[in-house]
Length: 128
Image (tube, rainbow, N blue to C red; front, side, top):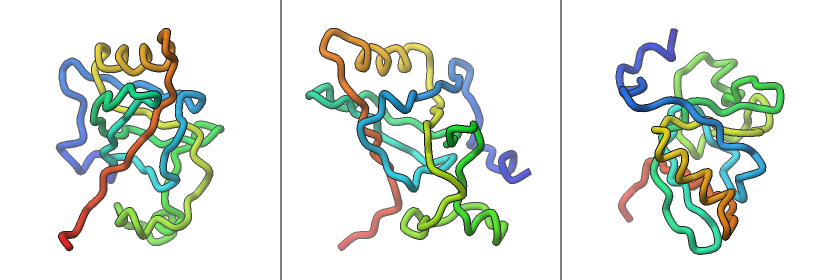
């Protein structure tokens, strides 16, 4: 039921969920979780491909990767820096985006100047 509580976590009219293949990913954090916002960059100078919300973080068996503490303590979300232990190893992520935005990512990976993806997690920041 926790997934349905956040009214902002819904697909817009043109959006759907697309898999980011694990072979496409050059770098990503092991603390990625459902609902996180990420910037996706293409390596080899491709630059920023877009900013996306993560729909799912899955392991090789297609099980959702969660914080180990979340599974035990039953709380909804944790600070990124508190995500020290997960229920399994991340295999791939699924993002919410439009078909045209996904085509841009796929073209970056499969294009003539083939590029891997760098997934940069956005987190809460503090002013120093």
